Image 1 (cartoon, rainbow, N blue to C red):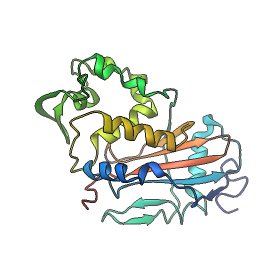
Image 2 (image 1 turned 90 degrees about the vertical axis):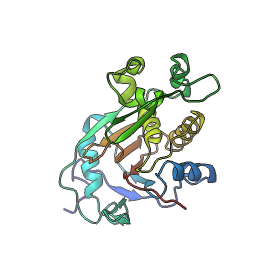
Image 3 (image 1 turned 30 degrees about the vertical axis):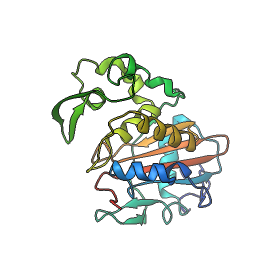
Length: 242
């Protein structure tokens, strides 16, 4: 029985949906921001359909079936060590996935950044003395609250807060790629987070967590009604400059 056929890992069968585009990643404004954050050319979203009922408690079977499916292997894109987009090309032998909650849907989730003087009323991010949280330079209170666990205001976001997909996406954009030029104001991060989050139609998320860097990630955003899965992938490195 070929991988991906009914009866294999729960009967999930996938189909590539190349006609589905993600405008949030390709608008002129987003492209400009991703270039500044050193993520342009290293982040991609793709869509696939599936034919069985998605059951969250069987997420590992779902993700393994996805990576073994004959319609996924030649179509799923990832970056090679040389920075070229290639297809998966082969079956994945082992995966680890965790559920990522999507209960936070409003950008008011981040109002506490203003309330705690991490961001001024003007929207400007409060600066701090430079320090390092390997490999990130911490030069403002925003990156401090995102990364430094023993910082004074780290606990304004609880551990459950930090596990939310909305928070994860925001954090990834704030930290960026290898040559990220940080924003002085908060709004570009909030706007881009909102656009991408809405574009992905977040319902339930699986995260294959085998990673070499915090900023190398792959999220599976599952819509159990439409039976679509959107794959958001980023590989940490130096993004396109022009």
